[in-house]
Length: 229
Image (cartoon, rainbow, N blue to C red; front, side):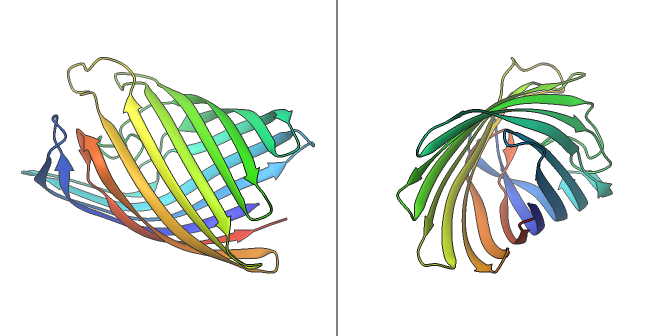
């Protein structure tokens, strides 16, 4: 499966160290990303992601701008259990830094290599619905803090061709703060609608950031095209 996504992401406020929303310049990100899942065997899947960005960040007197690839991801997923209505997998991923946004809330182009281990579990809800949970630990090289992540998805097929997805994406720093690397957390909510056209799906959606700490208060809209092999 190949997913191409175009995203427009904007922010004019941030969450401070206490979680309060404060005026904080602006953050603009325009991104086109390609995400690939390719089944190598019945239980093993290659995953990869590339993203081209045009990003700008104004914060007080500081202005940062970049254009190019953000962190690129290459990973391997292994199915470890399958039941009548559920499945569970483990995934290992390597992240290679690029010119754009490699680490959230850090200067563009900053960041070093990173590695992630992720556990995934999904369950069908009859013929029309499903739920999925993913939890991950991301190790970062250099002075950047390791991260804990939790992604949740619920999907419902309202008709033969139409599907609605509700998702949340959460990240927390997993180490104590140190100079130049404050602890943080960020929680995003996303809703989208997809329509099937044969082996392709067109998806449109939006996301908000209702809660955070030492993080940007982002709002985004996106359009994705899914292609099944």
